[in-house]
Amino acid sequence: MFPLLRVQRGFGLLCCALLLSVGSYASSHREAPLISQDPLADNTDVYAFKSPDDPNSITIIANYIPFESPEGGPNYYNFGTNVRYEIHIKNKATTAGDDITYRFTFSSVNEDPTTFFNIRLGKQNLKTTYKCEKSTDGGRTFVTIISNGIVPPNNIGPRSIENATVGLGTSYDALVQQSIATANSGEKVFCGPVDDPFFVDLAGAFDVGNFRPEGNTTNPTVDGLNRFNVHTIALKIPVNLLQKDGKSVMQAANILDPDYVIGVWASASRQMIQTLYQGADVGYDGKYVQVSRLGMPLTNEAVIPVGMKDRWNAATPYNGEDLQFAKYFTNPELALYMDDSQFGKAVPSLNALRIQEKSLGSFDFRNGKPGLFVLKGNQALNGTALSEAAFGGILLPDNQSPRAVDLLPIFYTGVPNLAPYQLATGKSGNPLAAGKPFIHNFLPTLGDMLRLNMAVPATPRNHPKFSSLGLVQAAVLGLTDPDYNASTALQFIPNMDGFPNGRRLEDDVTTIELQAVSGVVLAAVGLWYDDFQPGVTTSPVTPKLVNVLGFNAGPTKNDIELKPMFPFVQNPWRGFDYPEKARF
Image (cartoon, rainbow, N blue to C red; front, side, top):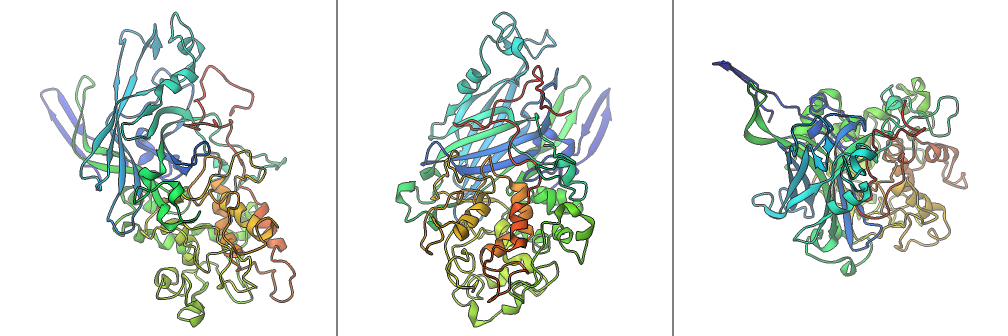
């Protein structure tokens, strides 16, 4: 699947078919060895969420090109003109591949090759446009839905953008608005440079989990992506165009209607052979091959080991290709640093996160331990997702894959609205009993993608209980808040639309995933932490659970306020402005 390497010489002509880089991942900022050499094709993040300004639409955002410095002249970053950027959508578990594919290809022209400036006298170098094509038959055929979309230029500085004599003579906001296109099939589309909305303590994360929690005055946290830009492809899509039967939100049976689940992932592809000629001409030949992909955040960065990262990026979430990586979810490396019998004592920054060793006095979820496997085949599992008649073969595969019961479905299948995957509210101490529903984004394709139930309403961003902890906070409210824990009836709980039910721009996915590795999902459904003693402890909200819920991985929000309307991502930083809070 990898491009070929070939060298040919003759008559002063040097033809080099270069090995193109392969890699990237879900919060993909140079996570795979090969893609780090090909930034124009490097996915950085994927988001999919119910549009907060329109209950009848879904916003999908795919970002590319990591660590774009606003001062990056004279050759500013731009979409690659020889890259296929694609957004893939799955809405049926019965089909083999994509059910909807959006393909973007970009073209650039030098309007004035006599200058070294990127913008001068109302002209741009490089001025970029795009074509958007759509397929609804698994990629066999494509129809053009936007033929000449406009990409706004990089936000270089006030003289280049606002000045009417030597620049473009307009505001950057106006350029963005002029670039929002409406496809002939009904979608709104924006492609262009934006502020990178992801936030993470990169330096701490890769110093063997040496995270610096927000509020730590001794060693303050740093957002490693502060004031960097990316290039975004943003789509605002009516729900009926994504729902498998063409239904609108109003036709959903309830807010967890299983027919409204979609899976979303993004990729970039290049032709297999690149040829460099004397005189700087470049030729491209051969079929297109996938050189990067992403779906769930942090998969390739913090789950897949370095020796498998390039292979992961060349695979797809279809046809069982992702099953070769399943073992990294059933026994995740990060869990070793939350376990004092392994390396937990060497990583004090993760002290608040400790995995259940003896939940309810019996169940051990540390790596290599049985987890719930001791219940395999037990009649108590009948009617639950863990029964052999349901998904027990996947969720309880053996006695050494404890996290197949929680982490694997979050990444590979989504979570069904079945016991035990309901809140402990109303379970009377039995995690296998029916509880309070809070999620159904089940799409059992056995592959990595963001899964979103489009029937779930959006939580208003100004709601007093809106939280960047997404579904974790929805679980907390459903367990502890009198407005939501009075019964087991299905009701909307704020943040049910948050990660891992899709992914909002505001969601603190690093913290959420670390909490998940430490067993917070298990606790939410009634497999409490070790300091809970059945029949003795009065509340499941024990000190260990409080420690997990109080943990944060560093920055908890983006470095600049998001927009309230599509495309929601903020204008790109410009090099001319260097605020006090900028990175040093």
